[in-house]
Image (cartoon, rainbow, N blue to C red; front, side, top):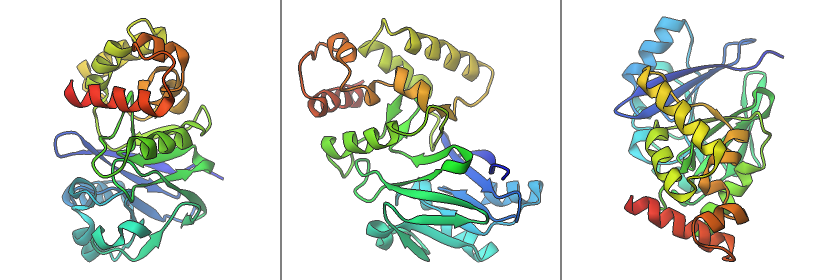
Length: 256
C-alpha cells in the first residue's frame, strides 16, 4: 500500500497545517487547520478533495478553520472525546486506543495530555507519520497549560516508544529557539549540536525543520530524556526522578 501523501502548509506566524491524503481513494484530512483560506487554496492547487479534519486539541490556532472548511467541503471533523465541547463542528469524538480511518489508511489515536487535558495524537503506522499537535516539538514540547508535569512526561514517553523512523509532524516551527534552549541544558551532546547546526542552515535557507524523526528526537530532545543519567548530570539534576527533572527543565524553558 502506498503511504499517505503529506503536504505541509505554513500559516499564521509559525503554525503548520498538514494535508494527509490516501493516494488510493483520495480521502484527505487537514490536521489542525488554524485558518481555512490557505488550506482551501492548497486543496485547489493540488486537486485534492477534503474529507476530514483531524484536531489534536482545542486551541484556536488548531481549530480556527474548522467551521469554514466544513461549510466549504462538508468534511467530517474528528477530535478528542474529552475535548468535544471545545472542538468547533466536531462530528466524531475519539479517545486513546480508537482507530480513525482515512480511506485505506488507519490512525491509532493516542491520549497525550499535558499541554491541554484532552490532547490527542494520530499515529499512522502504515506511513510512519505522527501528527502530535503541541505535545512534542522538534527539540521541545508544549507548555503545560492544563496538565501536569507527570501527565506530560507520561505522554512524551508514549510518543518516544514509537519507531526510530516515525516522522514527527508537529504543529509549530519552533525548532531554532528550542535548539538554543536545549544547548543550555546539554551543551556537550553531539547529536544535539549536529541537529542545531542543521536547523540553523535550514532556517537560513527558508526551509522547514519539520518533520523530524523519532530517532533524532530521542537522541537530542531534552524533554524526551529526563530519565537519562547523562542529561540529568548535564542539567545539574543527577539522581532526581524523571518527573521532577522534566518539570525543572520545562520550568527553565518557560523562563528562557
